[in-house]
Length: 152
Image (cartoon, rainbow, N blue to C red):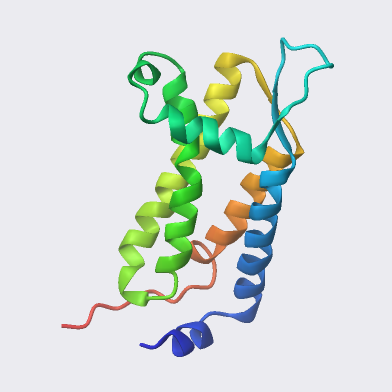
């Protein structure tokens, strides 16, 4: 199945939702995403791109896996997973991998919120929009996609 026929099979509403979700997802990187509840109001909150950088670099640090930082590192994987998901959305033969990525993204979101609770971080508008954008991108997994049939 070609990309054109794949897009023709997907309802226009879902495509619009995913495109809008992607725009929101990207915009969230430039907004205040999180702040430490213990910090004074004089300190600027972390923007989304800063959170992404910190979380992904934490992945390669060994001490990350001995603390709640592991949960923060998991949140950093949402971004590459979402981009991979978008790429795989163009080919129907990757339906199982897309579903796996969608589940992994949701697990990483929960890990992010657990990290916020443990480390007393306060999510801000950038975080909320980042999550909303990612969920809008994933909407096709739960609504509107025709079940893939296996051809032998």
